[in-house]
Image (tube, rainbow, N blue to C red; front, side, top):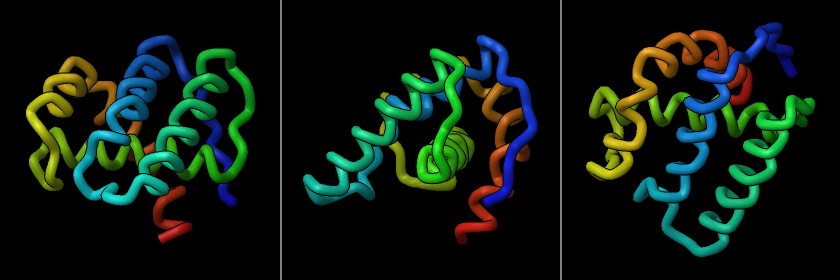
Length: 110
């Protein structure tokens, strides 16, 4: 897996945390088991980011997916509720900055 060499500042962590928090609300997670997995990855990834701990490969990929979904939701490229878009909107510029940093992880797993 590619390693990302990027120092996250507090604004980056806040934006990623928001992107993680809304992941469970996207309508494309239909089954309870999918929502449970999304919730667990959101919690573990968010906690590690807040405490500046190393993410494992799965968590890194999940953060990349959360940023990609946020990026697309803010552009109306994927289905997202008004609540999701409203939550993400304050982080618009930070998500735009982070998207190209994390998108290589999605290309690798794509």
